[in-house]
Amino acid sequence: MSQEPKSPETPSRPDATPSSQPGVAASPAAGSAVPPRPTAGPPPMVKEWYVGREGQQYGPLDISQIVAGVQSGQIRPTDLCWKNGMASWVAVESIPEIARLMRRGQTAEMIQEGMKEGVKKAKEATYTAFGAFKLFALNPMAGLPAAYQAVGKAGALSAGIVFLVAYELVWLLYMLGGLHSLRSLGAGGGGVSVADLFRMIIVLAVPFAAVSLSLMAVRMIARSLETFHADVFVGGTVVLVFGVLGLIPLVFGGLNVEIILAAMVFGLCYTVLLLFSAVSRIYLISEAKAVWCVPVILLVAAWLSSILSRALIPKMMGFPFGGGLM
Image (cartoon, rainbow, N blue to C red; front, side, top):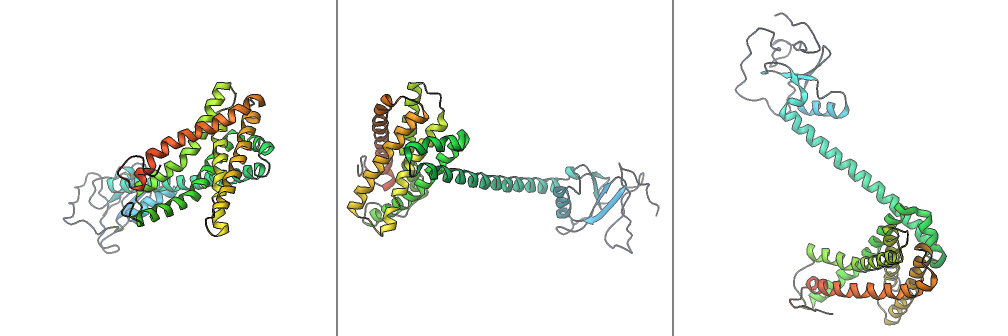
């Protein structure tokens, strides 16, 4: 049996004979009859494929090996391949089963790379937020504008979101425990559903959204040159204060009325200092106007929080009537 000459366009048939490699037939030669297709397909992942590039042949390979070669760059999608029963050599990417596995591999690789990038950005945002927190925690008046300048606008945005997440994680635990207690007393049946969890996350985000929107309104009315990055950053710092205070019952081993009242007073005073510092030293609004802006921000934020909470909490607790516990 004669061999075809090797060429980049049409690689030569695999050097195989029935005696040396049983079950693997030679590539069809030019002008010869096309061998009949087998009546039964080969078993999965059988090594029956040959890949040709620049006159060289590689194989036999199975489909998974070809896909792995494409993903590693050892095989190009435009390289030619052939197996017994095919009339001619064709591009690797034109084989349906190979192309399907290649797309799956590309999708999985994209998801994996996206997850890695997401984890990397989350770590960077957490480090940025922690650095900002250290600057303003003990001195909110001078530390807050210094932290905002240190992290920059992009860092301020990510830090504000991290502050919100930290606050939500603390109070989500309390809300889950409270919801379970109410339902065990007959206020509602069943466990905590995905819808309940989603509503709790929204309810906890209401104060953050209310403060941020109030700051945005003040910024726009005063025609400050700052952007929404400052709104998110300051809104995050405000809710973070109450997230940190939410850890007090864990430290003291339970709820105590005196401790709760003291924490609320401390949190309110600290929030006033944060807002005054933000309005006067980040938004650069005069102190005379900032004195009036701070109570307006607090009142509007409390009003918005009350409205949204009244709409969401009764449904979350499983009450069939409006108003619920409010």
